[in-house]
Image (tube, rainbow, N blue to C red; front, side, top):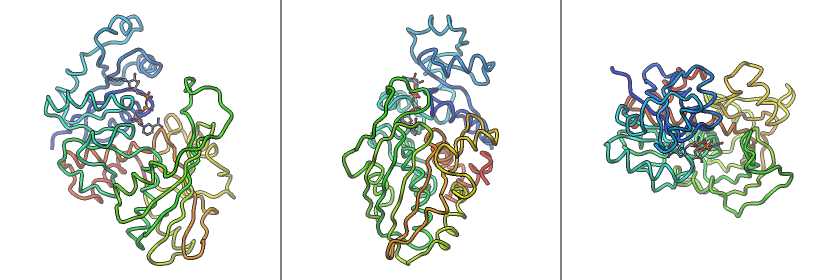
Length: 339
Ligand SMILES: NC(=O)c1ccc[n+]([C@@H]2O[C@H](COP(=O)([O-])OP(=O)(O)OC[C@H]3O[C@@H](n4cnc5c(N)ncnc54)[C@H](O)[C@@H]3O)[C@@H](O)[C@H]2O)c1
């Protein structure tokens, strides 16, 4: 079978990781990446010897890009033309504009969490609704928190049925290097219910979900606490068995030194993971506890890398490369080295 040709629009925090992810999929070909300016990530691409071809999505910036030594392989249209599917990781709202181009050129596209749901035919998660994405033209991924949260809730749901979840999200306020967010030292409340709980219900309508979100001035990952009301009562051992079997959930222990989000980031770097990226969410063993008939636990969400596997799943569904969730997610996991 010919390799599926993929392009990435927007070479920022998510886009550069999508490019890495696609390059690792042996049944896909990364045609190139597009951005609008010589950003730090684009300068890094040049210094790395241009492992991917670069396309300019803003013609008026050609001189600036050339001055920064960026070799330009063509326009965004030139990139889209050569691709079967585009991964759009531009800033929120830009994807909706780019969609007009993808539609005009008859190409498939996968949008990220910052776009409105209306941008896509299906709001997609590789584990929760893979089959809904089959053959669709436009898919939208869930945000980083929702992606990780749904992995855990869907695994419990398939094993024992989930009626209700209540979550608290302790949200990192910025990505590393985001100077535009300011030098902060404060916590900030969001209005309830958090969009992640609402999004979970859009993808898993049989689960009653709600939640509260607190922004925190840290950059290395979010933590979500989940209280899940399951149809069949489960204890810590059952929970460890169900969530521990999920390829994209890693169980860690406070006892072993995983004290919080920063421990996981450091561990990923110490393992030599590119950019310190973990594709798995982490479940803290010692956080799992019963509250009456409910089960409560805490997970860590590596916001920069968590959505990469589900994006690969979205390509597989849209291009009908595999026809079931099990086969599609297993292929992604294999190529990304997720055990
Ligand atoms: N950062 C995270 O933790 C995170 C996690 C999950 C999902 N997301 C979502 O991913 C999307 C991208 O977020 P990000 O954090 O990577 O943003 P970012 O600002 O790091 O990257 C966006 C890139 O798109 C480029 N761009 C802007 N307009 C463009 C255009 N017309 N054509 C091509 N490139 C263009 C920008 O120059 C920039 O390099 C958003 O929808 C966001 O909500 C972000």
